[in-house]
Amino acid sequence: MADPRIEQYAHILLDQCLHIEPRQQVIVVGTPLGRPLVQEAVRQIARKGAYALVRVSFGGGTGAVDGTWIREAPEDVLREPAPIERYTFEQADALVAVSAPENTREAADIPAGRTALVQEAYRPALERLVSGDLPWVGCQFPCPALAQDAGMSLGQFEEFLYGACLLDWDAEGRRMRRYADAFDAAREVRIVGEETDLTLSLEGRQARVDAGGANIPGGEFFFSPVEDSAEGTIAFTEFPAVLFGRDLAGIRLRFEGGRVVDASASRNEEYLLQTLDTDEGARRIGELGIGCNPGITRYMNNTLFDEKMDGTVHIALGKGFSFIGGSNESSIHWDIVKDLRNGGRIELDGEIVQRNGEWLIARS
Image 1 (cartoon, rainbow, N blue to C red):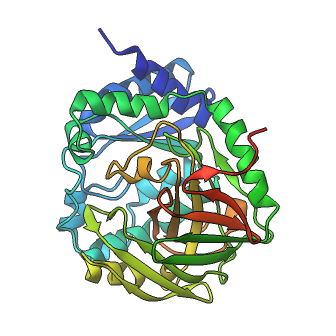
Image 2: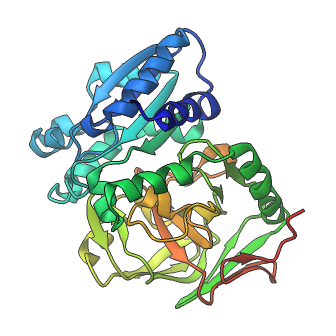
């Protein structure tokens, strides 16, 4: 018997996140292990009278671009998307991406330079995504590799995933909006924690609440801070960061004038430095996010979930969000999570609003 939660999951993706309408063209990207959710999404798209354009990836790539092709194609071909694929992204009305990898480290052997070429080639498609011109939602489906990374059995991970994703997102949105309003009224945010004292300007910027939006699970509100405002240091010593199948531990960044001027890592430092040199915008902050999902209380070694963890913040190096005032340009957007639950705090214009992961802002 089919798990009824899969039908509910697809309903959230298509109705709450994307609002699919008849005759729309919807790209559905998935992996073989994600077939139950991909098929249910296609079924619901069909019943809405819309078109499902299915793309299957075998993992190890970036977005809809398969890892095997990235490894083998000549560099001059990597620099240019296939014309028919470019046309598809230009004409599509929505995108659903279902991740269920066989191996979460499948891309670890792809040279950073080759990945960077593909990211640059697909920057116009990324523009449509981050600007909101192409509505999209990314999610995951329970599979052994994700469960193993989280240190769980498949059954445990399945329960965890649905517990974090199948929430009352309208109620969650109202709760997070109260916190976000305090940030909207502030000029400066300060993040203090272990080896961390970082200030960012929010002047003129507004928060976007993610309560069933571009990612499922939702459970954050986020900004694109003023691009030249970051000052100070931040140390990601609690959890490793993951990028294209590589684990980077002990990342430490120092900012001056909004730009990373010093960077180190205890593991994979060379890859960190290569990533920071991807382009001019890779050393600036494109996003500050505040995790609020009550169903995510522990590190999962899975950025889609970890960045929503209650009591954490994350910054994304690279591309900013133009729909909330961000102007930083880059072919990367890399989220890195900082835990504030053990001695950390968030200040707004000098007033502490969160301490040890607990909000001091009134709930009503």
